[in-house]
Amino acid sequence: MSSANPRPELPPDHDPLFVQAIGRGMQVMQAFSGSDRPLSLAEIAARAGITRSAAQRVVHTLRRMGYLRSTAEGRGFLPDLKILDLTYDYLRLNPLLRRASPALLELRRNVRERVDLSLFDGQRMVYAARMQSKREMYFATLVGNTVPTFCTSGGWAVMAMLPDDQVDHLLAQADLRPLTPRTLTDPDAIRQQVRLARETGHALALEQILMGEIALGVAIPDAEGRPVAAIHVAGSLAEWEPEEFRRRVAPLASETARAIISA
Amino acid sequence: MSSANPRPELPPDHDPLFVQAIGRGMQVMQAFSGSDRPLSLAEIAARAGITRSAAQRVVHTLRRMGYLRSTAEGRGFLPDLKILDLTYDYLRLNPLLRRASPALLELRRNVRERVDLSLFDGQRMVYAARMQSKREMYFATLVGNTVPTFCTSGGWAVMAMLPDDQVDHLLAQADLRPLTPRTLTDPDAIRQQVRLARETGHALALEQILMGEIALGVAIPDAEGRPVAAIHVAGSLAEWEPEEFRRRVAPLASETARAIISA
DNA sequence: GCAACTGTATCGGCACGCAATACAAAATGG
DNA sequence: CCATTTTGTATTGCGTGCCGATACAGTTGC
Image (tube, rainbow over all chains, first blue to last red; front, side, top):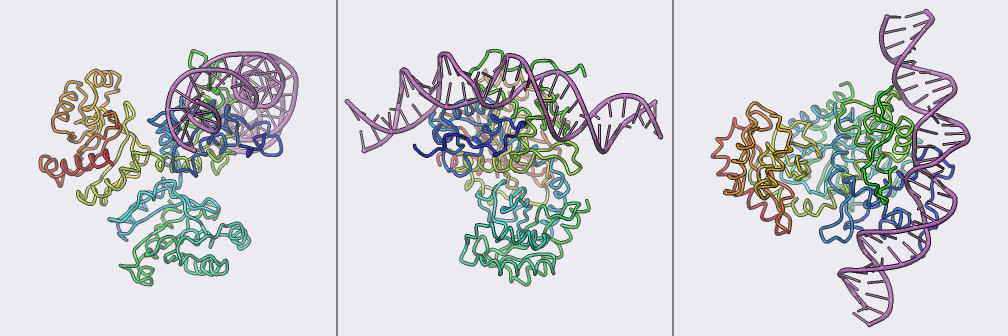
């Protein structure tokens, strides 16, 4: 128990516009992010860095609003359905996703492989849309799922659009843990991929996330030229020779990216 | 100006555990649900039923937390990326979805048509997972999208598992607006479909949501026998004779539902 | 059968959110 | 083109509503 620091720790300078209670509310929602089972009040309190009393009130409120629910056994709490309303509004209102949708569909029609759109968020790429192709696909690959920027084709393509110092900063901060035996973790090797992507306009990743998978990524910049997202096309090494995959997919994916930018 | 009612209006009986500020925060998030463009502070305030001052503080807070952002032009606000983190946690932690995933994949493999899982939420069925089949698919069909319970195959299948009085109540409260010329809006006609679903264990919907679409729904009950979700299989009337669709799909979908229940 | 949990309920004090107000800049429109 | 409205942002004093401590009943599990 002796763990928690007695005071919840707000941003150092007192921000008079910040509503503490809402901050706590969202921290409670985020508390579930690591866990793979329901959380008790005490666990929520610990993860959100608040007292058990506070957690009780916050959970009570969020439950009444439909964002949390208690488990069937009445023991522990879980996120609840109303979250999906927010999801829908986010996806629907996102200008990038609106423009991207038809182009991504056409891309999938043409390449007949899995096509994703993921959003650049610093160290993470966050999946926002996926159009899968065939049998394969885990449920683990859900909307909101994230993969590290440093070891994905889309991440490399995004970094290729950043100035060098930002790439360095990103790599310096990154948690470079490999996801497969073949994941590149050497910053220089990664920088090499980024350079390559600068030249070709796309990045090719071999078994960086999953063994047997080849992925080609193309970045999507905003109006100011800053990368904000990436298209992924993923195929199986059992079916594709890497160079063949690149030759076939790269032009289509690049064209799709351009269509999205100018849409 | 004279618009806003002076007091924000919480549930009439004073709930001492309810944290007003969090309630407001979530109402602000929900304010985007109708709109198809960014909202200004004043619009948010109006939709959430709070003053502009309150909206300012709430928006400021949610923005700092990553759940809202201002548009590129600095004019108006939108939901932001962090919402997808909540989405992911919800989908990941939902026990039903966890169990359903492998079964749904197998179902799609077998029927080669679009397969959805939607969650029963009163008047709405909320899409939580979709495994699409081929070309067709609108982006409008996103996670979190909802369709009315009263006019979908899944909704009928769900109602078939409810006692009559609850079906009546649901239909009495429903907003029976047709989505296509063929949408059933007569409560008795709907009850007839529900009866049919009680006998056969599934429901068949012809062009209820979209012209040219045929959909077969099977309900999924929880441990207590209450329906909580439905499987949808949707095909095109251009390719299927309705009875043929039923004969082919119904056994597979029912089997899938049973697999999910007992998993 | 004690000990350590679970979720729930109550209460007085004072922090903290409350609404009103003010302001510059940009959009609107007559 | 200037007058008017609406945008987002900033500040302040008042008082309400959140704050954390504490208590309690029901399960789980050494």
